Length: 299
Image (cartoon, rainbow, N blue to C red; front, side, top):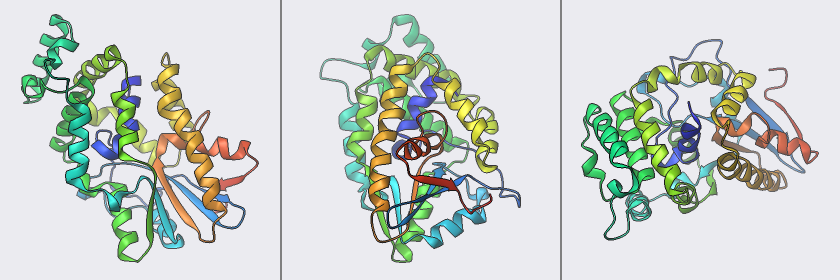
């Protein structure tokens, strides 16, 4: 997964454009879950995967246990309050090129021809997306490729956990708004957006194999492997790392500490790579003097 794949990760909940192709649950699966001892409440933190296949269920037992222990679930977005029609309208509104401009204008003739050829190999004519910005085209193409591989948004981890929470009468909350997450893409410089589209198309054909080692590390709770992957992904992209990872982690850490001052235990579920490596949410909490350890104790 390249630095541009790291860009895609930032809005994966919305667009379902970054997926971990999970194998069947195994008895030894132990995804990393942390517990934060807040001022008055215990908060669990789970790294998420955003799309799954039907064959990827049931989930590891530790995830089910974490949901059972929590009285509220907190995701990157307040999933149960998202109106699909409103979300799609916002996505297309931000993603559409200004009047009189087109996707072709954002790429050199050589790059556009190469992108069109690669898109055609995926069964999509790039001209169909001609009215949209490169970041929107990239996310759309990646989403279509993932669905061809059998990854269904409705079976994503967040969607399933949110449904379980709602069914049991638990509150579902969000750390960010949809508009904020989309703005992370829309505010990318034009040349970065163009590179995102080109890299997305180059990587699309090998997506399933590409994610294999990362998925295995996630399921086995190998946080060191995940941290190394994160560091490699953003090598040479410090500005992107700051805006897409570090700044969001800082904001989330503050909100998670506030949750710990409340009167009920919660489960916080965010992208797995936000919980590992330098500047992770876990590291930031510990810098603030908050006790954070792997859950359950001894794992």
